[in-house]
Image (cartoon, rainbow, N blue to C red; front, side):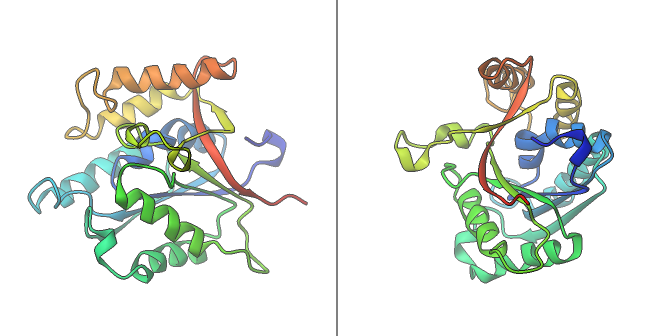
Length: 229
């Protein structure tokens, strides 16, 4: 994605729910954290109340913190917006926390959700990210990429406007094990094979994208915007 001689120093991963960041970007996070970059994660929705009792909010945050430590993340932020109800709150309330973290972190690269995901929260987070990253003078952001989330991205209907068609691939051959270790930290979210969030399925997905580009394992992304000088 970028050469070692010109590595950006600050990377922001924006996620709708706890575990999205590991599912979509876990191997890349581990790889670039190990290379000396500062990785930040912003999780917008609490990820619990639509499926669990309220006490799971804290539990999921603990899982996310454990996963972040495994991957080498510098800081993780929990915004605690309502789970699976981002379409029921003012859109500006989704944009504002993203803008705040961008202002604080001043990232070089942003990873966010794919707009065609079957999950409505994911779609809204994508739109909010685009709204929060409008190009203005003095911005630090040089690249924005969308990631896939197994169990959501592949569940979209078979129409062109929903398609995840990656054009950027990151070699995670040496960091796939860290991604899987981080996913295991999410004890309530790992499924049994052939569930797409199972350890076996995540391995298959990484191998699948790797085969596409001649690598042992890869994570795939769609480039939204890149600014070069």
